[in-house]
Image (tube, rainbow, N blue to C red):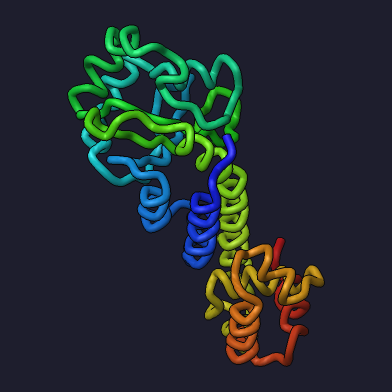
Length: 255
């Protein structure tokens, strides 16, 4: 499905907004809330599950889907058709429940009658993310009956977003790595000042050390070159070294 210009502009605006979130976690609650604005829904959850152990790991979400939080019940009557589909095919593309099973058959399933329906959850769409064998990671969006099913537009937007979700995960992992490296340096002076850098400043330092220009860094982080320049000025002030040599000074501490 080809998205109209307004949807493409909305997706770009979303990516710019979430790039400014300073978090060591890829999907803080603020990210979830902004995604809910991009693809309207009644509830939205990032979830990880172990299909072999029949266990959910801690999730992040907003909305009434939290009412369906009886893990024991879920595994007794489930998992849901989307999880079965992922495990069977390995397909991670955005998929609606209605893409996999017709309405009548779905309403006859115990997972719907005993788990989703009592929580007021009717329609859902799932965006798969890479996971280890036997595990499932995804964003899952829910709607109540009155809201209607997710559209082809919704599926196309989420599918376009999926590669950027992986980029956000990589960026958050880098922030955690930098925080650990800079936080465990010995001595005072520069190393003490390094711990004052924000996650974004640390991220930019690494990119500078890789030889990237301000314009290239701005394109990679979805920000303006002037924003990169301002971050570097703050780094110089905090660390006390001149110009881009700061990157060479710091980056050796990263394992």
